[in-house]
Figure: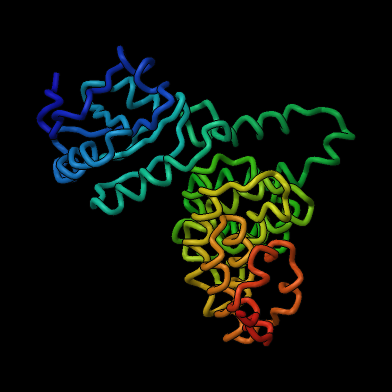
Length: 341
């Protein structure tokens, strides 16, 4: 049996085996697993980075799984290349990636995994299981009336499945292009971790997914729209769609309560695109007011005005009542500051 310590298992790291997997992977804490092998050069290169992260993120459980010693476990999780990282919470896969990572990339992987709501994620560790189940359901449906309502769903599921498996992203883009409304529900039901795999590095897919999310917003389906936007904001977004996530996350629009972590993440990812799409600053100002950041909101409004946006409708917004007497807000309206006696 290969010694797990040969690839850098040390204090802060635990060894994952078939015997302890059931107990270790079901923790409510985030669990990150490095699937490796002793003969693998990139695994040895990545080992100290992974060990250092275990010290840097004490709230996360870090596990090492020797794929040669634990062949059944590697097969169960469909490990086809190493090193492979998988993140679990409550027994569910929330993120996976392959290849040796530098420390910043690993930190980003952990941050993304930590942000995923585990209740959205399939209990099956296979990323294709959901698609396969949907295909089987559609194929087994002999009801002609039902069949008449399912062809778009069937087509989109099959296209998604084939595109992901073969990496033919152009096929997926072709399937979605101009049909965001028909395919929005399918995209929204994909686990977030797999959505990220789809849209990362593929701007066309990111934009199409953003359009599907906006369709859901227009239908009042904000929660599934967030699933899509959570993936979109992690990409190099087209500035033309970067205002929409900020609209979708506003409690003033969805009335589901302020989701501060998601709102801050959307601000961080969308605001850099504002110079190319100034209305982003307007939506950002509303989000910042909901986050009780009036200084940030007033700065966003000022930048929007500098870039030619009409602030008129925002001066009457109830969100801005807390700053209605602020000299900066009055200046944006061309009004003098109140005199001090």
